[in-house]
Length: 179
Image 1 (spheres, rainbow, N blue to C red):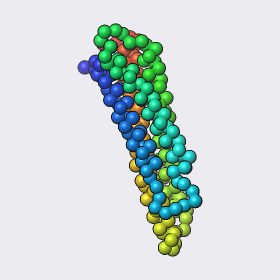
Image 2 (cartoon, one colour):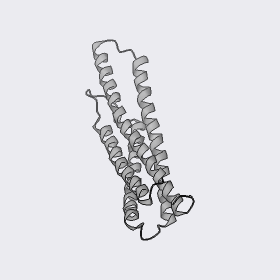
Image 3 (cartoon, rainbow, N blue to C red):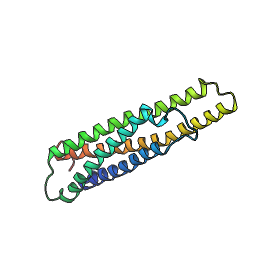
Image 4 (tube, rainbow, N blue to C red):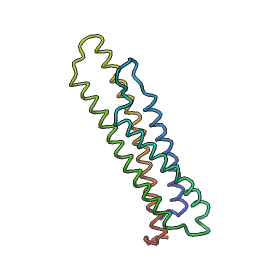
């Protein structure tokens, strides 16, 4: 049994709204994470974390710009056929946002894992002060994983929205056999 047009539009809308919430939580956790000790270097300024925040902002912007389109399609789709060009833009924007978010997830997990491995294997932390530094930084990077997990959830939801957009585009262009 095939899903109706309204179900696909509503599914895409829900996925976009949940993606916005998840990506906002990711940005919030990146900026709320801090070390207990004062260091010369601000670890929130790692390029991978900066890229993750920028990617989350792009993902939120793409999803937020498509929410009115989804609401319009929910309200008007039974009365008139939507423009294929609008659905094309929506589909390609979802795909691009998913790609950017996927690369940010990889960068976030990769940087966090690399730093944690370096701290575990590459630095000698003998002594009381160095042990405190290691514990402080290890806690910081373990908390950073939470932000990247929210980014991962946002990326998965963005891909779900892309699937819904692609399906709607196929139906609007009569590229599929089911009605």
